[in-house]
Image (cartoon, rainbow, N blue to C red; front, top):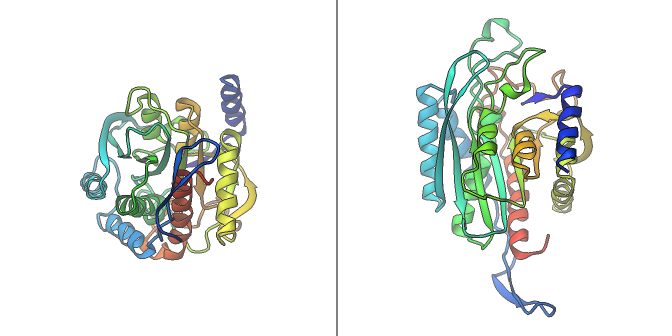
Length: 334
């Protein structure tokens, strides 16, 4: 992900504007006489999520066109299938800003694909090919291990997939792991469309004809200790109702130290293209510290993005909030 140039943001916004804990029980609505199911919210297992993060890191940097990338893809697909998802592998090729042709795969795990009421939970699963923000210039050409920037979001969503398998609902859920997110031009004048190649491809080539979703939630860098998730401006531009209800729910659950009521500048991340191209409102849950020059975590795009940066308590905070969103949506109480 990258910070968005103000002019580009204005253009994007203008274009968009122009396009305009109890047992299961069934209760009956007095007004509609429809059966409404009450789904209890399961407990998010932070240790399980951490293990999913560690398993990805064990492959090494999941840089496109490398054996570790291929191994990571197979592992994610196998995990989703083991957790009862109907899996689609959306293979594609895209030219990187370097001129390199990259082989990518967006991985989609579907729950209740027949349901018309759907939400998307997403993260990118690839890692950056260069550590261009490492404080040591001699390490700039080394790849990023991506424990936080990549693996943390995937780890949380795989634990959610495990819970969905054990505690099914009628809600349609699509867990999407976008590829080729982090192979963008890091130069000051780099083309913002050089980032997030997988989400751009998916948004132009939806995995099902006529696919629709009510909204989406993107996770990016959601594993570090002391994380602060702010209200990123593009999320508030495209999906303010979604962001506000997620933040209010998180704060009511006691996670207000993570989900803070602070507006921060817009970002180039996968949610931009889902909003802009697919026209599905999507928010970005992303760590925005207050004391770094880049406005991201200090290990962002460095060789220090390692497993020791991951705090299971942060994984639990994000994962528990997402489970609450899912099961309250399924119960019609949010």
